[in-house]
Image (cartoon, rainbow over the protein chains, first blue to last red):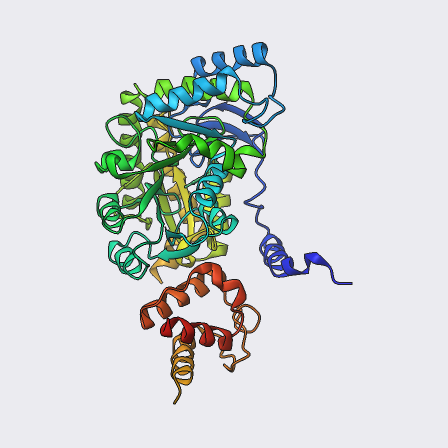
Length: 404
Length: 81
Ligand SMILES: Cc1ncc(COP(=O)(O)O)c(C=O)c1O
């Protein structure tokens, strides 16, 4: 009898080899205590959080917490039901209203996670005989949405308007088409040239879906995302987002002005066949989203922090994935897996948590230490982070290696 | 040479730079098993074949295309469509 787990043997061996060198498992961190959006206790040590996507620091906002507590008491711990049966409470409607107001759109649908929002929208919008045209570096949830559905899937070179155009040109003019883009790509922290890409998609008669998971809250006049900053709001048919980043809780959504949008509630399986979010979560989300409409100060601080971190790391000799800070993600390029893990561990032992990323999650086989900023990071924290990066680089011999 | 033979020969040329372990390439050579290509490499290879013949090879076809021979058949068919 063959063991169904034998297909994982190569990965198991790779991990065992890595851990045998004495490094700590980068994918098994436990936050023992969380003191603020920027500080947690890991291995008994106060650790600056620089890899949480908690961009706007809303997780501990007093109004958000108060709303959650009240909903928990009034509506209970969970809904025990699907959105289309017994799982839509007053709070879910209020959360969708907050999204409609935030985006200035007619329709909003709240899913249980952003992953499910993409899974549902992508698999339901494009059916048999339709084409999905997606950026090669799309998030796993977009790829998985493709595989859940029946459309033909065409991939274009990351952020390349020319490649998108070439691939669209080859498709039958009469076929239904959905072009899927992201505002910010979370691995390298680069943003999409949405003005060019959306124009090409529209010229070929495609509908456009933009995932603004990492852009919500601080791009564009109203903080709607990169698509707003790029001035293409009128040409974007669907915006997908998440509550797990700037909003500071958990959940996913899609907003749109399409007149038939509401039918999706009945035909979108990842919406229908799962329990809805707990009342406390939607109450937190609605309160947070409404506060994000007026978060100009936080936005300014977040951008300031990104610029300082990016500039500070460059000044200390690190190689970054983008020449300038394009988003609130600053990715540091690493030479190989072992150095990445050693550097990551050195930072952790110095009290700084960043994300470690490796292929196949990263494009082009790169190894990364990904930093994401929070509007609540203090100037002192940032200074400490930069010093600790320099120390960790010296301890691990990163620069010596780079010089060779 | 038949169209199929021309396509096959060109596919071999496209694969060669990605064949890091210098596995002998034949009709029955498989991408995942023999060439140990990860899914990203396979998708990039598909993109280069699409550009070579100005065709569309949707990614959802890939699970049925395990060997070089199967890909040559699929490309030949798409070129004639
Ligand atoms: C681009 C993108 N889309 C969707 C998601 C999924 O969001 P969620 O964490 O709500 O499932 C993420 C984050 O993981 C993401 O980075």
